Amino acid sequence: MHTSNLPPFFDGRPLPPLQDILAGVHVVEIPMRVKFRGVTSRQSALIHGPAGWAEFAAFMEYGAEEASAWLAAAVEAAWLGYPEPRRTEVPVNATMPAVAAHEVPGVLANYEGEIHEIKIKVAESGQGVDEDIARVAAVRAALPQARLKVDANMGWNHDQAVDALVRMAEFDLVYAEQPVSTAEGLARVREELRRRGVGTLIAADESVRKAADPLRVAQLGAADVLVVKAAPLGGVRRAREVVRAAGLPAVVSSALETSVGIRAGVALAASLDELPFGCGLDTVSLMAADTAAPSLRSRDGVIQVRDVAADEDLLGTWAASPQVTAWWRRRIEECYRVLSDA
Ligand SMILES: [Mg+2]
Image (cartoon, rainbow, N blue to C red; front, side, top):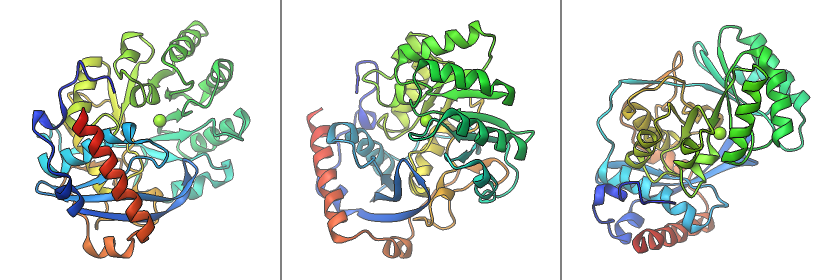
């Protein structure tokens, strides 16, 4: 992570001792309702510290370097807590995984209350643009008034992205998230859509989250909207600085955490100066269980800003195997070493 224009972790305070962090760790493994990112269950480490509960849930394939920012975010939450909120509730979008069009109503039925905004996953490997269009059409048919957006997770090349987004223009998309992989590629797709008179905005997600410099996408004029997650950017305070420095409207997204991790995203969204789009924080419903009760879920398109604590019974029910727990504890040690050396 490029750090020269970002504040240090933890407001410049030292890291707590590793033993203190490990003493508060509870590793869980929770089944997913719908396969997401190729996984059918989600493992994560809940961490209890003096300021409350945090969730360390860096994706399994990430090495210690990349995952260390996620640990920094968890330590921020559990040892410093969250900055003062500027709002009491956060608008959210519903999420439609890359299911077949006939499965769309079933997924929508998992949401309580009215859906005002929904993000539809597209460009899943093994699927074609026709399946994407059928899915988007099915969502539009079910929700004629809602704001629709698509997320390709870098899954298209330039020609596929332009073709798909031109064809999807009839469904009146608010924005397309990361249609192609690079920041330069986003800029080209954005320019080509404008040239063809398609007004769909371009949002950058992976180009912010996985980039050496999260601000580069803004400097290149590659996107109209930033998608930010608190954990990969090293915490709520640092992510807020990235948004401020970029000078673009931001959407806050989850990384498929339980309610404890979602709380960090809600804190980030609540701390931003402006929040013009629904955030991708209503993802607890994609999991079959949670670590907190009641869950931090939306009602009528908003999540209330409130504290969330892990529930000891739920932590016991969903406790990971000894092998999985040992793996996460080792991972925390490795990430801690990266942060200590930074
Ligand atoms: Mg995304």
